[in-house]
Structure formats: C-alpha cells, structure tokens
Image (cartoon, rainbow, N blue to C red; front, side, top):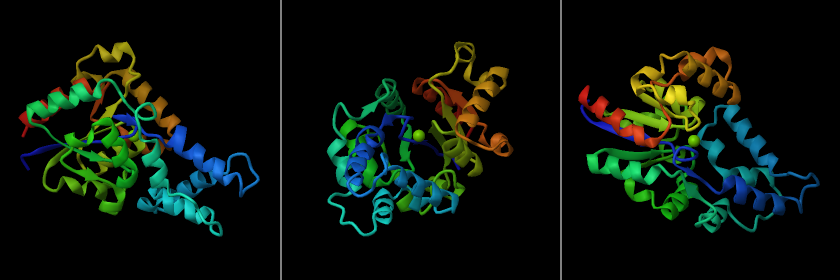
Length: 254
Ligand SMILES: [Mg+2]
C-alpha cells in the first residue's frame, strides 16, 4: 500500500444539492393532489428511514424507487432524476467557498481525488457538473455501483489496496464508515470554535473541547452513546484548506 487516495463526501462537505429546497417541495406539491396531509413528501422520508433500519442501505437512496413505492397506484409524471436535472442550476445549488481553491491546490500537489457519496450518480452528477466539481474526480463511487453505502465498511472497497483519506461532514456515515474500513477519517466541521481552530491539526482531537463538539454533533445526529467511540475522527478540520497538510503528512508516513 503506497498510494494515498483522497475521497470526498459531497453533500454539506463540498456542496449543497437541490433536494431540500427545490426537489422535495416540487414532489410535495404533486403528492398533495393525491394525499390529504400537508406534507405527503414525508412519506418518502419515512420509507427512506425504513429501508435504512432494515439494512437496505443502497435502496434507501434510490429516490425514484422510493417515490414509486409510496404512490403505487398513480402514474408519476416525472422522475426524481428529471427534477434534479431541472433544479441543478446556478442559484439553486452551491459550493462552499473553500472548495475550488483547495481542490486546485490538491490537484497541483498531485493528489488523487474521488467522490464517495451516498447519493446515486444520477442525482449527484447533474449537481457536480453544474458546479464545475466533476473534473476534479478520478472516480465517482455511489451506492448503486458499490452495492453498499456509508457507513458500511464494504462501501470503501473502492480504495482497493490504497490508503484512503475520507473527508465528510457526517460522523455517523463518513467518519464511522471510514473507521470501520480502517481508513483515515477526516471530519469537516466548519463551525469549529476558535479555541480548537487555533490548535495544530494533530493536537485538536486530544483537546477537551473536541469531545464536547463531537458529543454535541453525535447527539444531533441521533447516534446512540454505545457507538460514540467508533465515530471519533482521526482528524478534525474547519476548512478544506487544511486538507493538504493532512494529505502530505499521510503521504510522508508511507
Ligand atoms: Mg454529507
């Protein structure tokens, strides 16, 4: 193992997709003509969660199939993919401001980067194409291709024999999955308090404030306390600017 691969979660790590603000509201408006409740789109969310709790991880992210299963007897006049393509446009999707400068620096340094997301390719590519992100990735790994999803360790098989540094915003998916796969987990936490921010990257996870931040977020993500230890990231960063240092450090250690 002598190559280091940088893998990125997409949603809320690099970008904001159009699901919450545009796609789900449009689905909701159509569903309202068939169901009496105010938010029938919640039926999709419940089905998503049901699939997750049954261990059907890849299926839990197949929104077209979820929609079909919710409105069995009605002909659906659109696909979720079409709605994503319609709303994946400037002004409706966006990137965090640190993303492109950091991706440029990592590319110049020779880093191999891939996307590793729980969103199906057909829902993510229109967004990464619109935002100019796609060309940075040498691979695009998703549940329908891998047959697994984060936090399942097997999802990280895309790394093959390489050391993977996985960066993500979710402790219960990105960090837990990378830890289970014995890869390097990096939690991006843009709201990091300045006391933690001012410490060198290698010292942050030993600081008491780190545990406070971690427990607060785990509580928000609804992670049972028995799993807290497995959701501890190896690194915590407040900006993607800091990733180059981690990549160089891990490369040197090979
Ligand atoms: Mg995310």
